[in-house]
Image 1 (cartoon, rainbow, N blue to C red):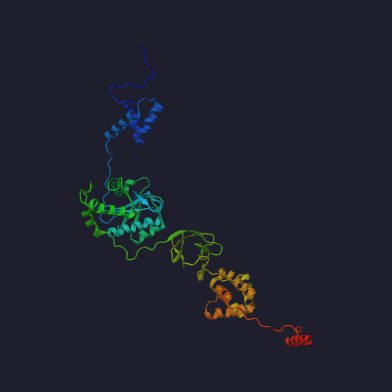
Image 2: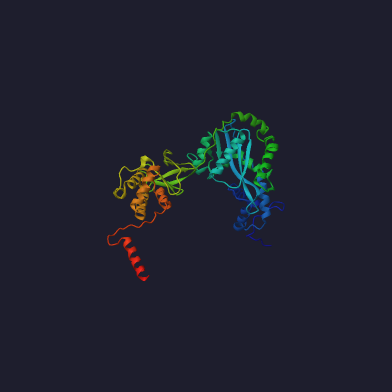
Length: 446
């Protein structure tokens, strides 16, 4: 009886079909391959004829026989460290569409006591990420010295184990609370394993399979579970109740600042040829020598701040201006008046003393940005006449509002001058002569 030389390795009837490939499968497991990928490789490369279920059972057996990798428990002092991260929150009904949307779960866990704060939000941004930290600090009644976080963009712009570039807003918020950020090494989530475990526990225990009609209802349910169950449990590592350990840690937390952080938006702007940067269609001056260079800009509803991108030094701080306006620091104005501006001022003084005084005021207070407004004043003199505009300019100076806008509105709203008949040409005869002529003609007909 002949034998087939191409047949696969022989095995005992009770042995797994994968036993001849034990070393190959074990090596694949060490490289992170899962059971499906291993089965496909065996079929393609070795003519494996058994089903996927056989490989799946064999892989489970190997994993069960492998010794569990030892993990070091990182111990910290009370009030020393907190860990933060995002996870998937529950499904909540989104009011605009009536459909259910996945929320985001923010968790801050104190490394000593394992006390956690869990907050839900619809979306994330740099400001929302920072506001969640503030809410968490207020809930626990203090701050920690170090925050350990992942390298998500809301907190870290450029990951680097030695010199990470933090998001400027996040950096300033933590500095306001006296906290230092410590980003994890890329690909090393175990450094913040306490918060990772907290997120997993939250997803599997209180939130598993639940849906909520509003975000407020979901947050209330999570807060109630936190108080009744999470805080009263005996932690598996410390073998102590979380609430008891938090009572020990709370006095060591740092104090909260008196005033909340004032949030701002930020970006990079290039200084234009007029020496200004643009923010929301308004223009703000930078110091001399920055034309063509980029500056860091921070702004809120009240102020605009220009910063040196390398050192973070404050270059200029301006009050917010309306759209189209300029804010130019006195130190940034050029000491030389351009020839065209001198010609405009000369034309304004030639049109009238008050007109010239108004244009001088515009030039002194607005500099190059006021050239167009001086052109507007001269255009008004051409439209309404120098005498009329001179009277309006005199009124503007008396009222303390020597601006182009006041002149324009003043002239647009002034009452029209009464019509008068005046003899302006010697060839036009006296009206009495026309009356006598009319009387003679009508008398002849009568």
